[in-house]
Amino acid sequence: MTTTVHLLRHGEVHNPDRVLYGRLPGFRLSDLGVRQAQAAADWLRTRDIAYLVSSPLERAQQTARPLADALDLEIGTDERLIEADNRLQGRAVAGGKGLFTDPSNWKYFTNPIRPSWGEPYTEVAERVLAAARAARERAEGREAVCVSHQLPIVAARRSAEGKRLFHDPRKRQCNLASVTSLTFDGEVIVRVDYAEPAAALPAGHGAGA
Image 1 (cartoon, rainbow, N blue to C red):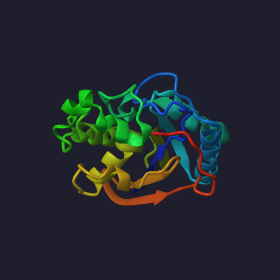
Image 2: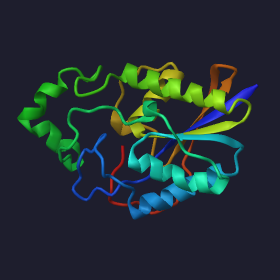
Image 3: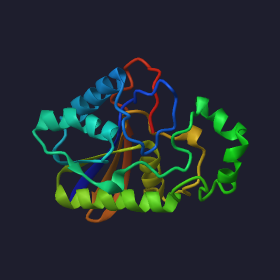
């Protein structure tokens, strides 16, 4: 019996100051992010979704809402889907360059493989896959949706595909409101698929992790 768990990345975030917000409170979806969430819901509502769960962060909960409304589902919350912890959160990123040019940050960049600036990739992948397996159990024989964040989804996918967890962030395949689908045969992941339901929407100027 197969079960599919969809890892849905949240939509664009309202972030005019270009802050690396990580787990900080108060970062909601932008207007475009709301439309992206609706596009993802329109795509997923045609599937046999039996269970919906989200990261506790506001942007993820907002992204889950249109699908919950469309399918009359409750939104569960799973802390294991939360954004990766990052010691640099709260700092202005300016496209990322500002983080590397500030000498006070250099101590965080000693080990990019672990990485030294935040939660280890192995721990991120393990907790997200554990959340996905829990969702699989709740939706056995049907489908589930877990709303999370870019790095957690990428780490889980790379682990499921047997790839090294250290990677170039610029080459991640996990755009805003994208869907990374894990198909389980029993407890084993046998297939990974990827879709971008919101790809046709115009690009915005917010950010999202």
